[in-house]
Length: 281
Picture 1 (cartoon, rainbow, N blue to C red):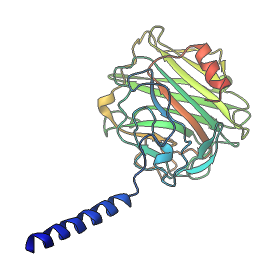
Picture 2: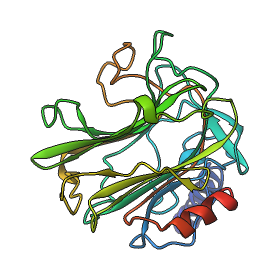
Picture 3: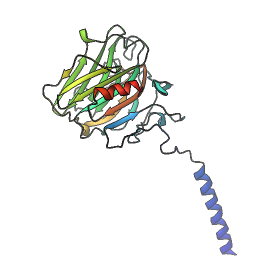
Picture 4: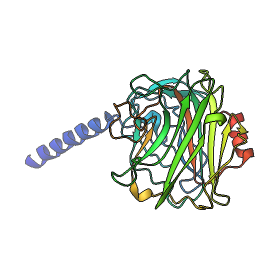
């Protein structure tokens, strides 16, 4: 009799356990946009922002290594392809330490963006609008970053500025002043690609599939050698400053639209970039 009671009790426990497991709200693996590229392929980071989940972290997952952000306060919006996101003042999408460029000596950054008029800082006056920043550990570099890329200006004249920190040195690649670009802040989607090629130590900028004639160089620097061991955080839509709520130029956040953010460990060719633009990828 006692053995029978024990068997009944064990069966009840098993039923309760199975029922509880069935009620767990776990997202299915692969329930987010993927790309035809292995984790060791040239595409090192890709966020399509196309997720349809009620979980905002699912909607900003990196499809290459299934890296989920720890925070995504941006709002969903219509993108260039499917869904996209709209930036929120003093907020950013935060990923853990970004180390998938380890071993990369050339890079490509590709993104679709939509900016409505003058870029502004976090207090509403003129300032930069960051596409991304790779935040460094405190004390590594004066900028508190390993790399960043931002827009600065208006629809008449918009500068593109980027910086990369290689151990022992850093360099700016900018298109500003008389080489600023008109027509980028017209509240329409534009495709921007930045490449750095180790074989020529040069950086190129492509807007809507067309290469900007002004090529930037890093004086024979060669391989990029990003200090990946010094990276503490990867941000989409904000600068690397610790005080994101300030109007400091290193703290400014992106208030426009973003879509299809890709980062490669190689310098893409002009034909490959044209293909990305033509397919709205």
